[in-house]
Length: 185
Image (cartoon, rainbow, N blue to C red; front, side):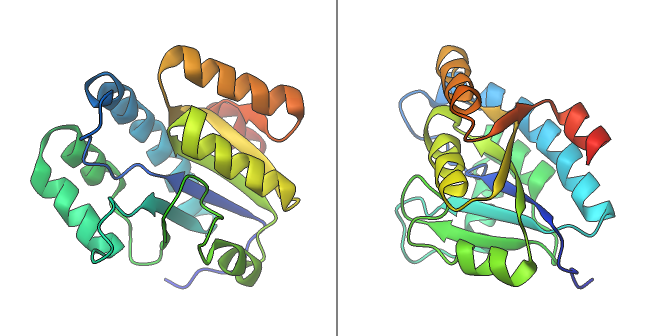
């Protein structure tokens, strides 16, 4: 199915992970829970023919493409596989690989969003205090209307709370529940 340009796009940030970092054991169950909420947003976007874009780090492996990363997560088992099974991209979804925190930094994301006619971004993914925060700030600086889906964003609870509060208070993004995004858009 070909995507028609839309005003809203869902950006799924760094949900494909090996969970091989120091706080992975604590973050993994939170990420799996967020993945179920992201799936709700993705299904809504798919049913409205709105773009779904995955922005994922490259696992510091510059030879892997996105589909290989997804396959690796499926093979890894555990939370990596649970998330990959829930959120494996469909053929009409988009992806960008990112070398750093923000999905905008050194990626084709700005060009893709322009070609798709996107002006409103729903952000989801992990982690709230790092890659989601950096992406939200960059999106705001580029004058996108930014909404961060609270339950569809993973992070250590205290850090997530501070990051979402910073985005909300600075007006860089609205922080909304998944239900309110689904209801009001």
